[in-house]
Image (cartoon, rainbow, N blue to C red; front, top):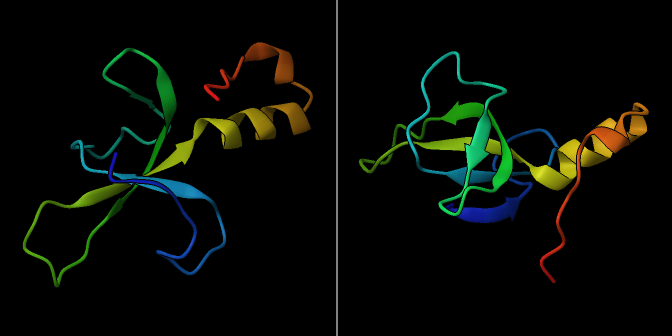
Length: 85
């Protein structure tokens, strides 16, 4: 993971994080899995910064945002979010 949570990388106000593991077209909505096997979010979008020579980055939707959306739709019982604090 490159940045745990940012909201100012694009024009919208959605919360997301940047990661650098390669994500191909068609992977949107797929899980982003940490090295220890935990799902930490879902793949959302390629973020190309044409002014940089290093590897591209990708936007991921954090797990707590997914849980919140599912709860708002009445499906909060389908997923459990672990609190590591």
